[in-house]
Structures are given as C-alpha cells and as structure tokens.
Picture 1 (cartoon, helix red, strand yellow):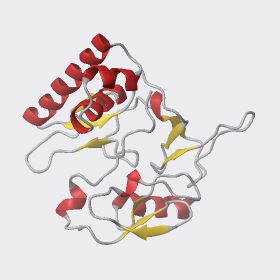
Picture 2 (cartoon, one colour):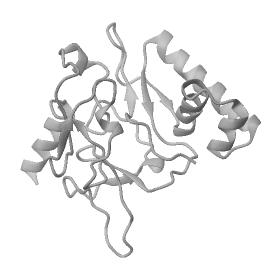
Picture 3 (cartoon, one colour):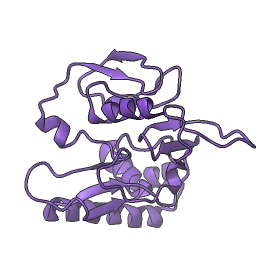
Length: 203
C-alpha cells in the first residue's frame, strides 16, 4: 500500500548519448522499496509492513529495484516509473492528454474526466503501464529544464485554477497538492505547464 505515487514519472540521463526509446521500467513497488529502505532508512522488516508484503517478498522487490537502477546508470538508459502490483490509499489518476496527476473519487455512472483539460483519456496510476517517450505524461525537469538554467526561484502553480505559491528550493512543485483542486502542482516556467496552456486553448 502506498499513500501517493512518486512525484515524477521518471528520470533522463544528464549529458551523453542515450536512446530515448530504450527505457528501464521501475515498478511502483520497486520505487517504494528504495524510498522506504534507502531514503527513510527503515529496516526491511519495517519497510515490508509499510508496503504490505512479506519480508522475503520485500527483499526480492528491493533487489530488483537496485539492479534496474544500476542498469540505467551504467548503460545510460532512461527510467520510467509506472505499473506494478500496488494499491494507493486514494484513487490517483494521470491524464494522457495534458499529463496532469490528480486524486479524485470516481463518481458512479459518470465518465471520469481530467479536471484540467476535460479529456476522457484518464488512467488510474496503478493501471498506467504505457511506456512514455517524453510526452506530456513524462514529467520533464531532470534533464532539459535544468540545462536551460531554470533555478530555484519562481512559483509552483496549479494547472487547473492557477493558484500559485513561491517555489521553495529543494521541494519539488509536484510534491505539493493544490489545496482547492487536489491536483499536483507544477513549476510555472516548465515545459509541462506550457503544454497544459496549449491544451487549454485547444479545448
């Protein structure tokens, strides 16, 4: 069980040649295993309880995650974080049209739509198994954005209502939820936000 999905949907190599079509798929439970064990420093027994699996199962997930990350680092491959056998505490969705990530209660009898662009191309994150190649669902910011010199200043903005707050260095904008819309916020000067503005004009 995970409280929320990762803040980004992947990572791209910084510098050097790499094939954007060659990806290493890190499953949600593998990401969470690395986070619980190596970031929050839980023991494997404590982490297995958090993830809701047995201790031996957690060890297998953790070992798989480390091997995948090592492969991506050594062979200069892009990492995509998606899919797997995991449940979130709440329903989290990703829009295939504008890339927005949001949580929402699914209303019975009504077609679920993206609250930002009204697209019906919405997928439950734990069922999102499509490998993305740099499109709106793949969060830029760990390659192209930083090479363009975007620093720690600026604002985090809601892609739906444009509510914004000053960006705090070291805190990713998409780790914050808009208090009005329950949508992950994004950097105001990001390519992702520019993509969303274009989608708004189309719709």
